[in-house]
Image (cartoon, rainbow, N blue to C red; front, top):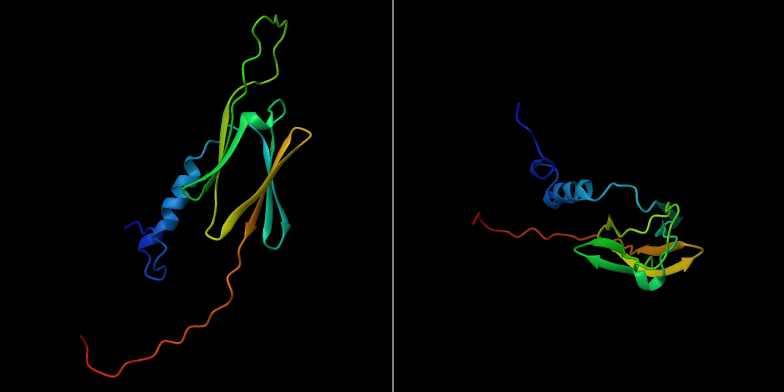
Length: 140
């Protein structure tokens, strides 16, 4: 039996990048830290919310790299000179990536009560009907 990939299916012309996109999405970190929500705000607007308690705005970076939204956090080590009897609050760095579809733009980012909100907007192209003229003549 021959394995048929998405990019090789005869009815999916031009979708060869879809398989690479699925593979890249599967490789993103799945360690669960920090926890996040994705909500649909309207038909064309979304919001990603990460629980980043203990991180300041300066500890976080948000970039778009190769059609992926990448959110990184790195806290400064302020434990010097402190003696902990118990240390249960995670103070570790993280990187969380989200693959963005074509036409999805990153809007604003806000911090509120230990939650980082990143708004996304999908640009909807106008519906276009294209008529292709048939030329007369022989095969080339």
